[in-house]
Image 1 (cartoon, one colour):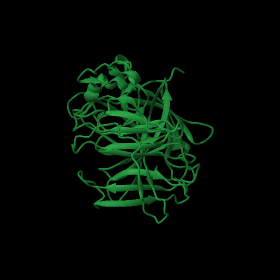
Image 2: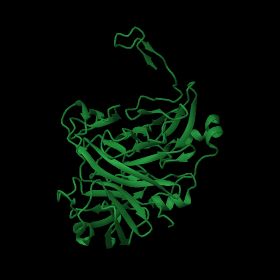
Image 3: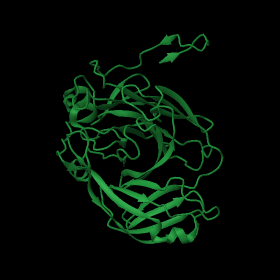
Image 4: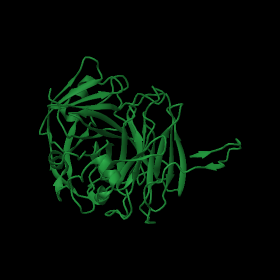
Length: 382
C-alpha cells in the first residue's frame, strides 16, 4: 500500500499488505493483481518458475488477498499470466500465454477451487492452508488431449473462456479492462478490452455464459500503440490508458516504452457488436443498421474452425480444422441483427467468421473489422 501523506505528489509511506507467496529470483516469476472485487478482495495470479515448474510456494496459482491482508489459495493451473481484471459484475478474469498446457494465449475465468490447466504447481496441494481452502489435489490432465474432452473428464477444470488465435489477434495476451463507461466510449457496454504485448494492440471480447461456462468472441479493436501493451485501464471519462514496454520480449510498436490513451471520437464505427451462439448457428448484432441485401447474401460470410492440442509440450499447432456450411442468413426486424444457420459447428473449436461482404444500410460502409473469433464450449439447449 503506497501513500502520499504530505500531498507533494510523491509516495512517502510503503506498507506490505501481503507477501505470502514465494520468489526464487527466476526471470519468470511475475505477480499480477486486480482491482478490488465486490467483497474487497484483490485477486493475484502468480507466474510459474519458468514455463514448467513451481520452485517456491504458490507459483502457478491464483490467490486472493482480503481487506485485512489474509491470503486465500483460490485456483491452481496458472502458467504465465500477462494481466488480470474484473468484469462489470466483479468476476475475475486473467490472460494466460501460449506455452505448456496452453496451445495459444487465452482469456480465462477465475473461480474459487478451479483448475486453470497447467499442473506445474500441484506440489503446493500439500500445504495445510491449501487443503483447507481447496481440498485434495486436482486431477491431472491427459497429455495431447483436447480442451473439451478434459472439460468433460476433470470436474475442477475450467477451460479458457476465449482462445485467442496465436499470431492472428496477438502473441502475448496481457491487460484487461471492462467497458464500464455507460456509453462514454462507444456502444461496447460491459465488454472486455484485452491487450496484447507482442502485437501492440487492444482486442475486444464479448462474453456470454452457456450452461454454466463463459465463452464468446474476440474482435480486433485498436492497433498502432507505441510499445507492447501490458496494463490497460479505463478512466472515468471512458478513455483507455495503456502502458507499454518491449522489455525482455519484442513488440511491434517500436518504442522501448510508451503510455498511450485512446479517446472515442463520438462516431460509432460499423462493427459486429455481439456474436451470440444459438443451437444451430450464431446471431450477429451490429452497431448500425445493416443493408438487407448484403446481410442476407451467403457469399458475404466465410467460416472455418480449428482447435489446439492440450499438451505438456510448449504451444500447439492449429489442429482438427473444419469448414462449417452457412445455410441461411436472415436480417431481423430491428435491422441490426442477422441470424446465421450453420451446419458443422464444432464444440471445443475457435469459429473464425469473416463477414467481408456485409455493408451498412445508410453509408454502404464495410465493417471496420470484418473478423470474429468465437470459442464454443457449449451449445444452448434452446
